[in-house]
Every structure is written in structure tokens, then in C-alpha cells.
Image (cartoon, rainbow, N blue to C red; front, side, top):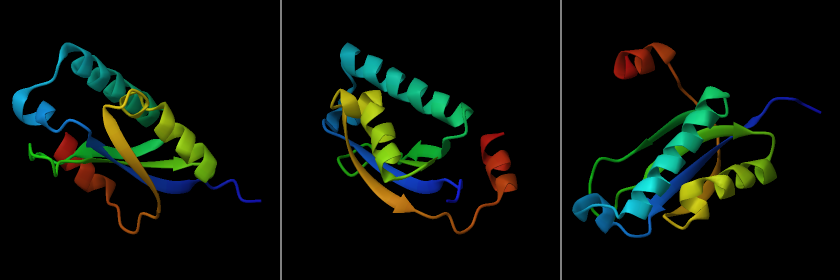
Length: 112
């Protein structure tokens, strides 16, 4: 059996899109902070490869998280444990994914 992890992507979208245009409640801000801290931990331990969101502020706005997991069951658990998903700030969709092209130099130039 291969020890290589599979890649997945999950797409998140705010359930209340007005957060982006009119502002978040205190509870929503706390959930966003918890969501970001969760993704940061997963990035630091090598699970998350890339995370970000669109910059538009209407209902079409979404975020993506590209990550690796042992299998689909483990990937679903990662999505379900996201505080933003768990607390129903976001709806989430999980997809199997395979990165085809990646140049780490490009990310260093963008992220500094």
C-alpha cells in the first residue's frame, strides 16, 4: 500500500454573504479567526498546501483550500473540523484534486 497522500480541495462559501459587504457580527468575527487559526495550524504541519479567497464582496465570493490527506474519509474529517464549517459560517464542498503545475518560486514572489 502506498504511503503517498491524496490531494483534495474544499470550496467554502459564506452562508451570510452580507458579512463581506456590511460587516460581521462579533460571533462571526470570532469564527473567522478560529477558521484562520485552524488553517494556519494545518499549513504549518504540512496538510494545507494553499488557502485563499476571492476578493469580491458579493454572494459569489468563495474560498478554496488545497490540502492532502490519507484518504477521502480523512479529508472529510478535516473539512468537518474546520470551525467555520462546524459552526455553519460556511458551506463546504469537498473534491478530489491533483495539482498539475506548481512553481514554489512564484509563491515566494507573491507571499514574500
